[in-house]
Image 1 (cartoon, each protein chain N blue to C red):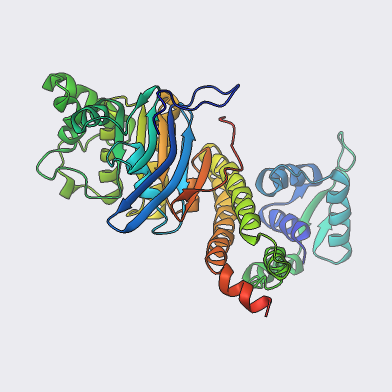
Image 2 (tube, chains in turn brown, orange):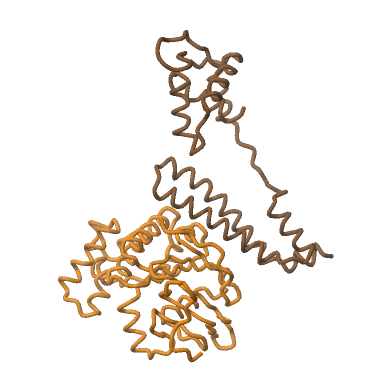
Length: 175
Length: 240
């Protein structure tokens, strides 16, 4: 199940809610500068209702396009539980752009080390942004920034070890 | 090199620290093979590079701890590498603060006495020095630990005491060599946050040697030392 439907379902497991409130909570917790369009919220809720994961109450008086209160069903709760319990597929990233760039540069006799330096610098620039977010943001911000920082750090370790192995790599790929 | 002024690029603010073509060998082993670096006043720069690349040697040359075999090192308009030992020693005490990986506190002294030490060595009265030391301990989240000796502090606390000692004399430059190298990652980040905050508040220039990208990301700019030279410097962040 993709991220938006299951996180909306999860928010509904906490308590029944209107579309507007769901969107607001989603944006605060998961949006990170990419707010969910209202249209997507209501389309998603309609699909979840069709599939029996939520039920919509009657329209309530008040302003706004949709004053229905949505509640999660037992099937919806099971869906959230299954999603949380299922480990995410570890991605080995064996066909990365970085790997392809280094290999192609070596095959062509181009300066792979210079490309790696540029990549290291770009990674550190991004890490500076995340470090600032971590330093000045909430605990939720820090948690998210840490996720990015650890992944970028792993890339950097690969960049450093690749830079140290360019000579034998070059000999191997150029035959 | 015999220039009597540090080299300055046109249309640039004069840098605080300039090293040009610094060469340094230890016996037959070359550590620096013509390293050049420029650091602006108030800037926080991370010096990165593999083990043995020469990054610590570069820091020691910039800080006047080591004298280069050739090349020049400037602090403002003062040339450091041609100074005598006594003059360099005074410069280090008056203008620089140092933080190393670990083991730098005097074990017989309390935390506040350790922090006050540079001031006492500089001739400040004991009561004034201890007052300044306590203020810095408070800024670095160490209230209540003033009377403890280094053996009674955690690694992170001891490193914050060392940081307070580096900052207490309000140095122009703090040189930090793997300052979080002996700490777990949360303690290390705490030390770095405090170092960055103090630097920004005081306008202190920081030269930070680290192999850790997460630590380097606290700096505004990184340079990479490889085989004794400083590589291209591609990005410079703006200070927020």
